[in-house]
Length: 79
Image (cartoon, rainbow, N blue to C red; front, side, top):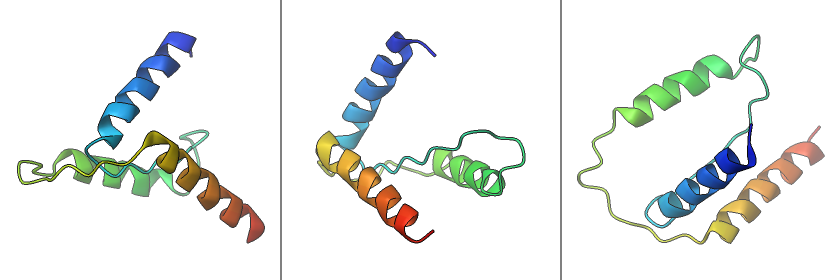
């Protein structure tokens, strides 16, 4: 993975977060991971959604990052 790819992804997420609620979940590997099947199903379902009636929701990228961090900190505390 290159720095350019990371920069492009961050830019796209920033644009997307200006008009949508974004939840990112890191899945380290696809093989033998219990959540992969569900993640694939959700990805297919999400890509098939009709977004013509969607309304923009402005969410700062920092808010999204903090939400991701809080989620994983809470999750690690439950272990």
